[in-house]
Length: 86
Image (cartoon, rainbow, N blue to C red; front, side, top):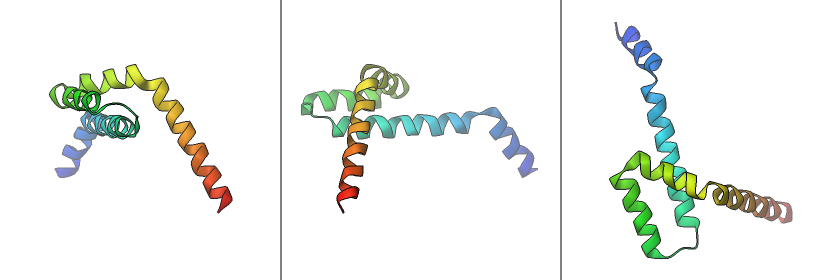
């Protein structure tokens, strides 16, 4: 009986949505606190994600998606250069 319930939950897709949403929050917050913006701007983004969780995170990714990618590429290149020197 438990297996049938578990299979139904996984077939429903809701756990996958939760995982995707949590990953979106992790990416948004990690990028937000890595950026060089004022404390008020960071507080406003955090408040928007707390008040309207899904909408706030999606708006952040849409507004800053290209910049997020550029920062991740730059950080990865710097990390690889550091590892090559070590």
